[in-house]
Image (tube, rainbow, N blue to C red; front, top):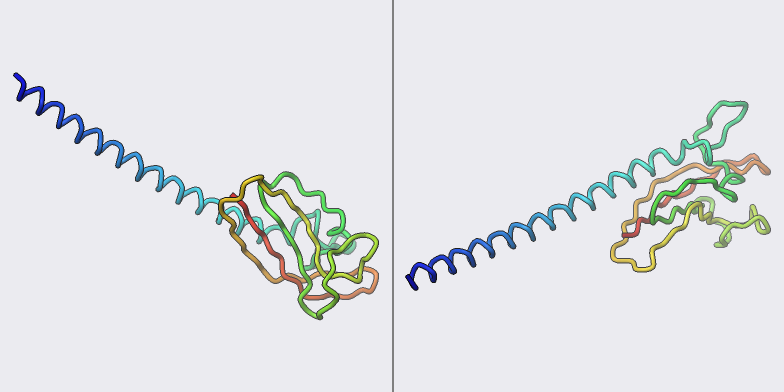
Length: 151
């Protein structure tokens, strides 16, 4: 009788360890899928942001492949989660200042969206070249569109 109880106890412990191990593997798999989903969301956001109505330059209803710098000063983007979206002019080089209404167009960095969590565990950065348009000077310049995602 004692041997039977001992065997049942050992089998129960082995099954418990197996269930716990399976649970831990499932959690890691879910975390990996979560990271992959966030990467895909960032890529989609990056590819569609330059064509969004809130930021793109249009002339008489025709879309140009550029971001309007005036619209970048007052972006009206909805809640995109914990991200930071910046656009930095890379060519031709200019003074390294954050753009505001008071120093426009003598600046080179625009913060379009900025929402950071209180605790940052992981940061992912994806960037893409973009064209920016300056309406006051009627010039196109090269910029880097960067999405920094926090989790």
